[in-house]
Length: 168
Image 1 (cartoon, rainbow, N blue to C red):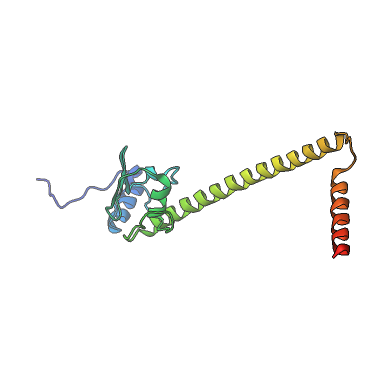
Image 2: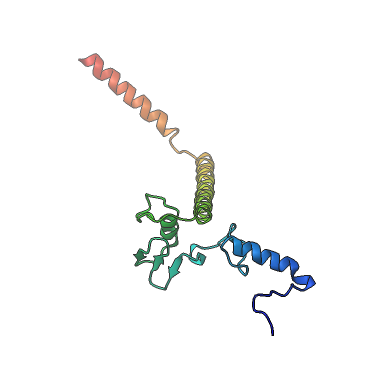
């Protein structure tokens, strides 16, 4: 008659698997889950386990607040607890690994935004400089019929002012 309390020894290849399962069970985790201390890198906030997304809006899985508009920037700011983006910050306590994930995503977002702005500024400065050079070259090529107009204006205004001051 088989005894229910007797545990058969694992096969040779299963020794390490059973040790890992026992260690995971001792930690309160499941042996089938991957290491939960590290989370995979997300390419979008909508891939996060705590973001319940539908086509019209989304719900924060941490605090339970539902938002009517689907806006990735605002969702990231809510979850990373950043104020100033016209969205309430998440009031729930996030596990450390999720808080770190949101912080890293937000920093990447800001860095990308700064780089984009810097590139646009460099392009704009290049255009302005090119237009100034083109305008100067065009002015240098244009012949003057009556001489330098700016010198004539300054001379006329100075002589008019001098005669007006002598008359008084």
